[in-house]
Length: 255
Image 1 (cartoon, helix red, strand yellow):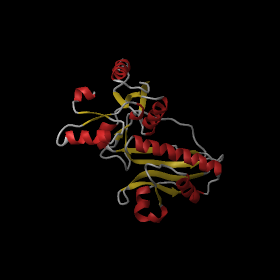
Image 2 (cartoon, one colour):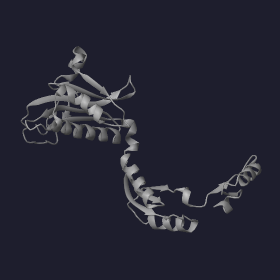
Image 3 (spheres, one colour):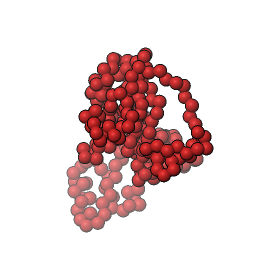
Image 4 (cartoon, one colour):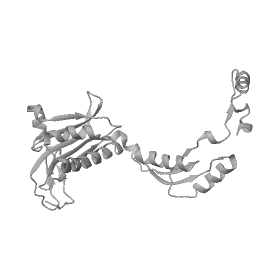
């Protein structure tokens, strides 16, 4: 097979030349199914497609026997909730251990689907072994070419004030598929001097290619700067409101 061309329904022309072979242990299984995650263009949301008994000639099945394909729509932000998992597991008749194994696979698919801007993640076949675990012997991924510029790996440096906000910021970055190279706590009193020093320190880290600044203003002195039409009147109204805000029209003085 090596060095020869492989032609399938997914390849065009003379097919693709085989340069590498992936050798895996033979899997003995008791049951099989087809599982895919894609975008439902009509519903404007992602969908999971399931077919019992595998997905041989799945394109033909979809055209001639669409009733054999079960579709489960879900929220891309909520992901694979327990309710969605139970609905998918029901037609397969899985027990608790099998449902847990299936859930791990679906959550992994969802993470890749979102992080890599996929349009199709297809597992064909998804097999269930005698011990109740699910395994993916083969998979096909299709990604949105228009999202290529968003796939550059980011090593994010963080300047934050407050340990709690530090942790929350790192968690939020990881949740949305990013990776923090570091974080620097500028302290509760984030003054001009401390912020300047913070930038000097964090920019020494050569791993970073992105800098994220998340400063909570509730524990520092807030300054309101207004400039433009009716700025003088606006500053007067803020001062008279006695909100504990420092007002300034000059940008340099405000900084």
